[in-house]
Amino acid sequence: MFSTMLALALVAQAEPAQPEVQEEERAAEQAQEEKAEDKPICRRISTGMGSRKKERVCMTSKEWREFNRGN
Image (cartoon, rainbow, N blue to C red; front, side, top):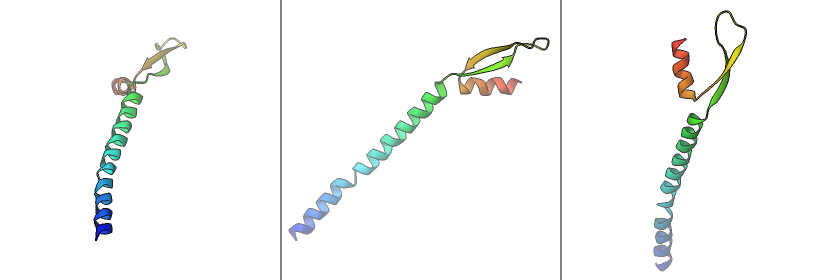
């Protein structure tokens, strides 16, 4: 009887730890995604129709999406 109660107590203690770990993993993944979103991406683009020279432009991925929608 005592061993059954002890086993149930150990199982009850172990269960809440798993959701906390999952929440921490989700938070870490979201932080990495946000960090990746803020990281500048540099590309070379043409400055005009008459020039062969390309200009280096750095923007975040969100800014590049907006830039590409306009072109």
